[in-house]
Length: 497
Image (cartoon, rainbow, N blue to C red; front, side, top):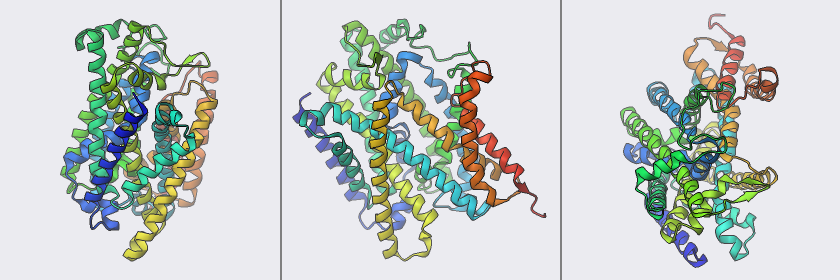
């Protein structure tokens, strides 16, 4: 694809985002920014949440993972289903009953000020790290396939990327994002379908024939690329119970205890609409993730059939570069266009909603926003929005340094590992509040929330040595949450004491 064509596509795309922003942010105030005035159609929220949940990491890393793990990732996706049911039946009714703007206000009502601030702080930590790392993938693709040819340094690419998000979200906030995410999710899903179809046509196969070819292609471990379930080795990170229950609790923590995705649900008119949104979102998410895995297998079938060299670094295949390399250099113009739109849409749909949620969380949870007049709210919101944009930029630049100095980094595994440590205290806090009827000695809560993840890190590091080769995967989040729950119980007391 020519540089001129790429620039034209991206310019048109962002002009559409700016148009949507302009239309949806008319007469917007701080309430519109944070809650969308609770007028969001549930079906738009459901569809748009796909883009916000998947991100550019899923778009690139999940297809790449098929090279080594087959379709093991789908075990996690199946766990998501059970997690989303728990969110719809248990957590969402609590949020709607309490009529919260920030979901961490629940902790204030259940325990007190210290627990509330601790929970809100851990969300800000986790979402900032995770979202900025996800956005890094979009910047690196733009750098490799566009800005390098123009002689633009990477840091400027990162600045432009973050600035564009800020421009179309700073006024309308969550109301704008409900519509921009719907627009972007359309291109994300379309890109996966179109690229898969083009691969099948190039290889003179129908989709069933393509699936058979994927089945016959081997991973680096020697298994079929369509293998989903792994039961053989309990010590392996791919062992089904680890992946399934890890996925379940990742969904509960990263969606149900996450202001970003819950903020969209809370813009629905009623709990009934919000639950319909969650169930619809779950069905589409499972289907879309399966498409990503099929696409991943198709990429390696194509490369093997056409004799295309896979991108390498330090003697290893860079799986995160396989999809962009093939789509932009070997699949033709149509696939290249939709790939660009897909990676841009997936990355921006995740990052823009995170930026709005972080702004909301910090304003509501730390700046006593409810007690200020509208003029003060608008000024503070703007400053916080700018501050988090700059923080995103810093983390993106750090992520690039980390990936450059650690060849073969699997970004989606890195992000899920970060989530296991940072969402564990939230999982423990919310679980204790919901299931136990005791009062916390609140002064202990920050120390528990900080200390338990360090303990889990120590356990994970030494488990292979002391537990017969056992390797922690996503179940590390469960351990983190359980130990937090136990520590909170030891620090609790009866209400009448």
